[in-house]
Length: 379
Image (tube, rainbow, N blue to C red; front, top):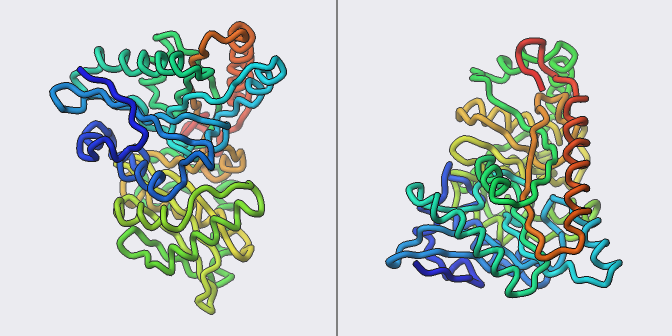
């Protein structure tokens, strides 16, 4: 058995890597990770340096982990700024750190790739390798973000610290159509959604539902501009680019869902981008050049829900944060992350922080009211 650390995903054969991916998760595909690297979206410039783990036996890949050396906490969506500040105040280095995650993507999925018949052997080896690499290279620790629930359970049993947070996900209750979904909601929520969709229609907005096959270069150019503008106005650093979007569309065309909105003049003014696995739709990005009333809800939520119903997808993860999603049929869902601190002098304090954080998240989730009629769906 051989263990290697790779500075580029292309050093690992794509077919071997993809053979270990479950649920056809788009973000774990070799092609997705490669597109990030090929287009400079992960690089020293943005604080993401690849160091992927590959475990082989007889030249066959039996285990792997997407892994990055991080010089900041940008694009992780599990916020540890208080930890970094504590290190800095005590003149200790928190960066670099090791992070197993999909860059800029707060979506659940595999992080510990492994042949199904070798889990008991390979999963501990992946974690041990990350820990040893962290210690040998003087990283402050190792962090695994948004892994699958069974992986999180396993890492917690293995001794990693587990942090809790909350997102808002939609779940398919075997709906036949959008009206079937609306019928499950409370009357006020159902009325509000119909009004929002009607408002978009009244403004004569034409929506185009595209995939990697049907979206043109002009479509991707428009969307890339919307994406850049969103970050320029609100979020700061735009790390993705047109080359990345187009490469994903080419490599994963059937898993790409692009919703574009045109004015009556045929001018494209907004778009949302989503990706699908075999069971789940993931909302990722939104942008616009003109503010159109209620269009964000239509393009980012309602079109996604309709897509899930039509394609029998079970879950819709529209992204991080956003309590306003509850009124549109999304319910609070627990998310977790796992953390190993390398000989940290703050171990006890961080463990206490995590305990209080878990209690606060649990209290918050209990305080939220379901948008569904009594007996149909509870929080």
